[in-house]
Amino acid sequence: MNKAEIISHIAEKVGVTKKQAEDMIECFVDMVTDTLKNGGEVTIAGFGSFMSKVRAGRTGVNPRNTSEKIQIPSVTVPKFKAGKGLKDALKASGVHDSTPPAPPITPPTPLT
Image 1 (tube, rainbow, N blue to C red):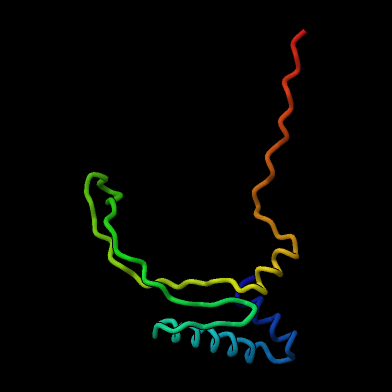
Image 2: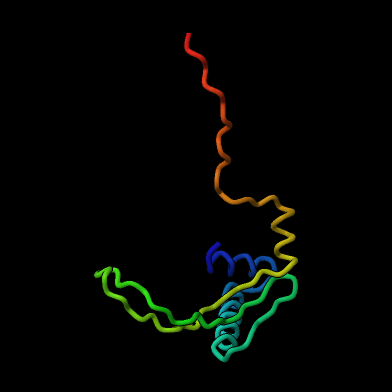
């Protein structure tokens, strides 16, 4: 589901115009972004928490010259931790990963 689909869904569900729904989404995104930029955390009970974490700097390998080491600086990245309600809803719905099950192993047929 993309942003336009979310806006349409909210507009239908809540009974507001698409412009009002778009303003709601923009406001939510701006509030979460500003809170995370200021080192805060946004928690929605039953859904999850948005937070920012500092990923430590490290020494890496230059992809253009693998014999050369480069210093990768520390960076602040966004994180999301799913809440119990969201986890339970996904478990109950039977959503599985997209990896197909392994085929059954059948014994080889003897040569006659």
